[in-house]
Length: 328
Image 1 (cartoon, rainbow, N blue to C red):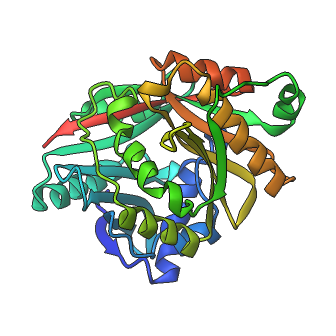
Image 2: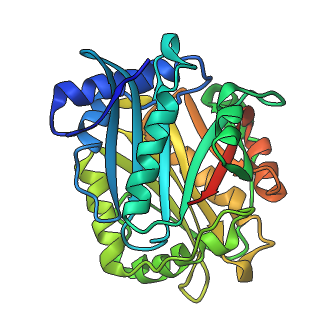
């Protein structure tokens, strides 16, 4: 059945709510918290973001929205990339709606000179899902495999007393979203190392540069959209930032949180800083939100060190994430 593919204005709240509902319903069978609450999306999706341009797409049948899509175009680095996502009403799958949305994403990406399209597929651990076959049939290759893990905070509380670590002379500094002035430049240096230090598989990603101005802009966007980034830095004796980890909590949801990034400078590895940083952020989040129920994170399956850290904290795998890639 033919549908019309239309762009929607994220400032049109009725259209945005319909788009959000399609995505919500299409991901309802996945474990954990795969879709943000409406109150968070209502604020974050229309918010301007100089890091990327986002185009929201809808598949319309008559007056009903039966599919939702997204094209994400980075605008500061990795300018060869475009990100894609499509969601289809469960009752309308296998009717070509997802293919029509994805085709429009590819048109948008190619029109902006992008040569690599990325996407994601979520599978049950050890199993498969229709998204895997859908992606393969449309030319995507699996560039990396990750484990989506969830931590029940009740389990973390039980384990916490036995989890101690000496960060070997490194100071642990914590903050909520806005990095202290004395550390921000060194923090940016570490952020710029992220993509070269985490396992990326075959993902076609390039390093980025994080100036003080770029960091401050990103922080203010988080504040403006009601997201708290509870961050821990490991500061070496010479004052350099040697490692960072964070936990992100939205104002609209104090029951679920997400781990953002964790990275330790290679020159400072071997001191269990990854565990020390994660303990600091998890403790910080629990102190700020006593009602927090779960935390989720993702790691490449080949990242044995970080997976071991997460296992020690009590994380359990709930999904497999396929990072997908296609040359346009």
